Amino acid sequence: MQVLLIDKIKAENQLTAALGGLKVAVEAYPNLKASQNFMQLQNEISDVENKLASVRRYFNSATRELNNSVQTFPSNLIAGMFNFKKEEMFEIDDAQREKLEKTPKINFN
Image (cartoon, rainbow, N blue to C red):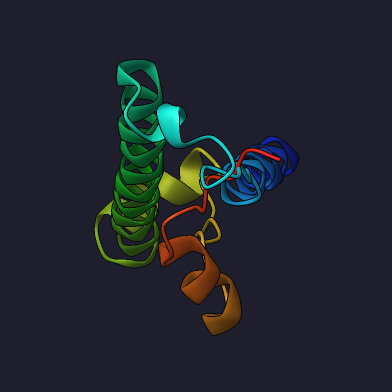
């Protein structure tokens, strides 16, 4: 399970980096700025980023609950019988957090 979890975290990081790295030069296409499809694209990218942030918070909350249960009595007795272990939280350093919290720049070139 640990390897699968790490793979999922890496995949989520790659998706976030891909969304953050999406660059579209809007200035070169003034008609595009007013396009309904372009506005919808911007809204959907923002929505995906918000959902990813929400899922990260949910994951950390569920992981914190699991880790607390594995360590506290009496649930630690059951956890030991079924070989439940503490899991890693989804953590990122300050530089990554700052990058993830920025709105992706969209530029068409």
